[in-house]
Image 1 (tube, helix red, strand yellow):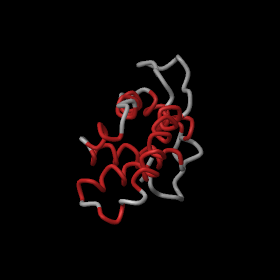
Image 2 (cartoon, one colour):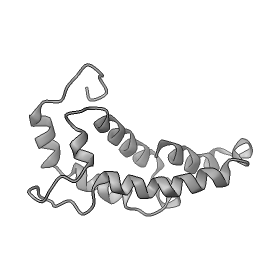
Image 3 (cartoon, helix red, strand yellow):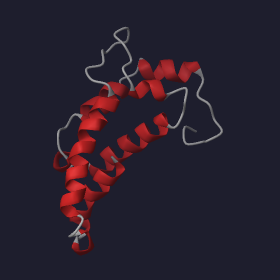
Length: 119
């Protein structure tokens, strides 16, 4: 349902997500620190990034990736957009480093690149 372009999330969905453990889980996953760590749980991290992408596509949910304030429990340690910005710097470096070799990579080597592209 969240992937539907015609669907607009009601306020209850946003509040439900704010009060769930999903956002802290996303924060923890994106805080892992490196693409190589994220590749260890490749499918899961690709799903997390896909979910963040879908949230960001909905104007009524975009606030979830921003600073959500201190009124929600568990408290947000760092906004998702800031964590993604840090990861994007690493992803850019990795992409430049692998640009020349990308045609000669096997599936195991392609995973970090696909993760970097998704970020």
